[in-house]
Image (tube, rainbow over all chains, first blue to last red; front, side, top):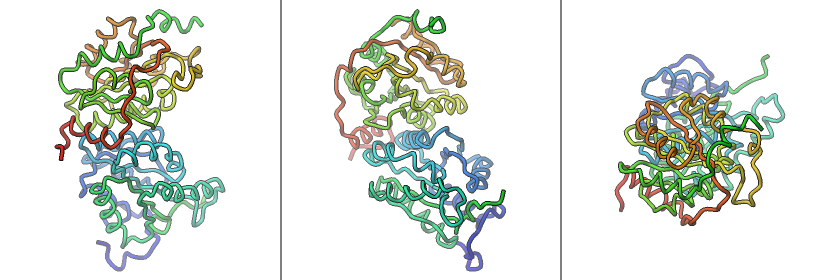
Amino acid sequence: MATAEQQTSPQATRGSSEKSWHGIILQTLKRNEISLIPYVPDRVLTPLITNLHADAYFTTFATAREEEAVGIVSGAWMGGRRGALLMQTSGFATLANVLASLAVPYQIPLIMFVSERGTLGEFNYGQSLVCRTMRPVLDSLAMEHHTITRLDELEFIADRSIKQAITTQAPVALILNPLLTGGKTFDK
Amino acid sequence: MSSNTTTRNTKVMNRFDVTSRLIAKLKHEEAVIGGIGNTNFDLWAAGHRPQNFYMLGSMGLAFPIALGVALAQPDRRVFALEGDGSLLMQLGALSTIATLKPKNLTMIVMDNGIYQITGAQPTPAAHVADIVAIATGSGLSNSAWAADEEDFERLVDAAMSAPGPSLIAVRIDDKPGVGTTRRDPVQIRERFMHGLGVREPL
């Protein structure tokens, strides 16, 4: 649980404290026995990815494409091992086919963390456009998704959503908003 | 064209026959992932096994799905059957597998150079690229063309005891699949999980 004084957003990439957004996600993954973490990297996700790599509990590795990671996590689930994939908004935009033909119809609890780009200070027009395709795709497949903006809500939303995905055998997308992570800003 | 001599020296085999030869060798509840279309149709036709998984979409993901199974169950041998057109959609997966080096994963590519199921159009790779060279260049050093059916069986035997992932490429004819998989994704997934010992039936 986050304490009251840590509710102020944005909580960007400060250290690797368990009370940072990435610390909370790492601990929530571990508590839910999610140990296989394929990802396509993202600047904002870097502290989470770094800490996952450093923790021997997790098998953390990059894939060439996001849909490849969906296949890996789906296969692992069927084999009895839990996984989650990390990606950026533009990566999610490549997934409509595999969500509609694998995760949803086969009832696979695919757990996705999406670092949200394209809003709240985006500097690349293409990123802002691709961001607008994300929620319509999720809604068109009636997929559960939450946009997380507050540190004090992160653990509750992530933990409950992971448990719901597993028990209902349905995929879920957890969208990490810049209000939570600090996002990526035009600084160079 | 001379760059393709390795391919051209291989016998053109038949997908159903080669798939049946593989299945006949499986005695230890090995998992088999069948790629989209004819590849899993022939896996189905070779005789359903509880350890078979049939893809009804997500073209190109047979190897990634098989990698996931292999990482989840390192003591079970996992085979993946994929078409050349499907593999071309997801070549990056070869490097991912080469990096992770699962000891229990064998990839089989059925290469007819065409998208048979959509009207036999040639793939962009058909006359210029070599699947085994691509796999080797992606870091999968244990990759080979099967020269004929006997050689295929020998390569499967070798893969069973190999210390790392193996890829076997097979030149096949332009015949369609022999059967048609029953398109019931939930049953396919659930029965596969039973077959892998992850769940008991209700």
